[in-house]
Amino acid sequence: MNFNREIMFSDSSKISMLNLAREAITSNLIEHYPIGEMEFDHKKDKLGVFVTLRKGEELRGCIGTIFTDLPLYELLPDMAIASASRDPRFFPVTIDEMDDIVIEISVLSPFTIIEKNDDIIIGQHGVMLEHLGKRGVFLPEVAENQGWDIPTIIEQLCYKAGLTPDIIKDKPRLQKFETIKISDDNSQRSSY
Image (cartoon, rainbow, N blue to C red; front, side, top):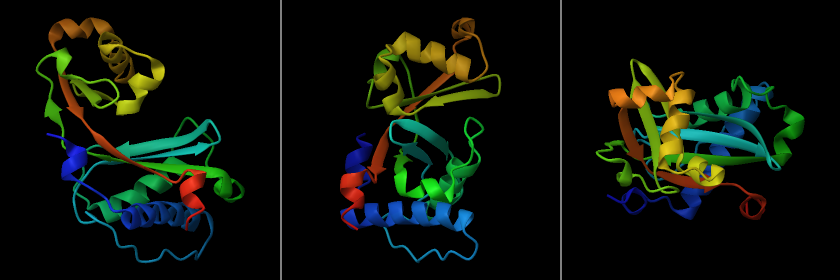
């Protein structure tokens, strides 16, 4: 399956999704700030989504959900607000920062079981490890950006889930997924 061929977003949909995320964050910071009605492809589909916020090269927040009962048009603003205000690693984003914040939306494919580690393509697949009720997830770009090989991805997922790498012998559940990335880097933002 190639998720990026099955689920496509038009350019106008991408802009609407980015606008929705930005307006949701702003409305959380400014009382009575209106959020416009946004139309975009797949808005009623129940797809996982992560919202990543950056200020220059600095990460300012990243929160998402992998499984949901909410349609994308409800989930996206919730994750944007959470990323800006509830990522425990960072102070909340302020209104003064908003002009400098770049938003990246990652829409997730359905998950598939990894039968063997060679099923993982670094840079294309995100990976989730589950064991004993604990879970660790990395988006596809994490391993590529860190220069990790597959054993390192699995080891780091163990740590992220609060487990030690020796649980590999217990054969934890591994699943992979793909993402569609939508970003409002400065070149795109200047067009709307």
